[in-house]
Image (cartoon, rainbow, N blue to C red; front, side, top):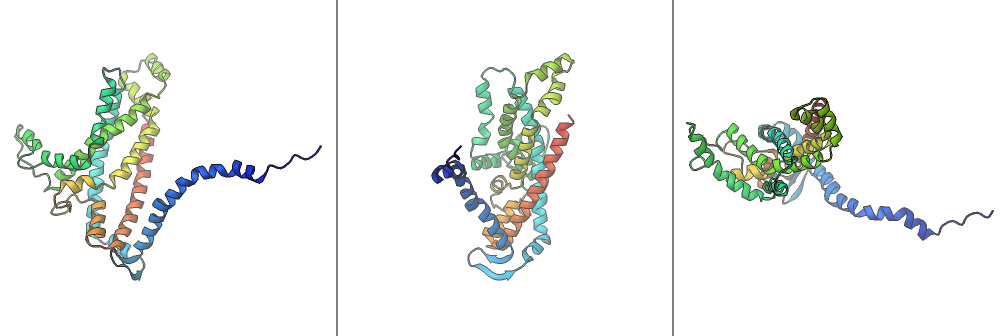
Length: 303
């Protein structure tokens, strides 16, 4: 029998090359706006680099050495971690509770589900201004309510614990509803057969929630934990707007890592130091995200 004719070159290219053409725009955008800035920042971090004049000729790890000996860096690291934990832990439990309520038959369920997303849609500038007034020492609503119970007015910006709590409240208000809708979508994909089997075994609604619902949405919980870790450790807008001076308080009591990076890069024009700080933040975010991911998977798996 005669050998089958080999397909023409254009046809072979169309079959093998077309899929790569479809995905090429993503990789082009990633290289230009992702990989190149990342590598360029690493190069800048190894130099004494002024934001205006550029490279000043020194090459080495001096920026990293200075960063590890910088007390303000450790202060910003503590503030960032503290605000993240104060906001993230209650946020996840509140989001789970709200999602469980929205997953039940409700009148006007669409309106309720839309309403919980509104805080995330509101401009962060508006959120910062409103919460700045709510936590005002002399005329704030929060101090007014606490005064009904005999609590003296609190200067929320003046102390570390109070400023962390105020900023964490802003973060929770913005992101709890967003996470609740993600959990709700995952809950609706959990098979009903599992709930019926749990009911036959005599499990209460509370027990079914922790033994069926939560393990059933474990990948979604892990995703939100990783996303919240990355976003929380890069917190900038809320604390920046909470302090009119933009420095995180008079004693930097709520200055975050990103605020300190902004101060070094755009306030002192020390791009090399800021680039080193950005790479340390990158490593810290990656390690913290992996740790939280493993912790949540172990906790949820044991539920």
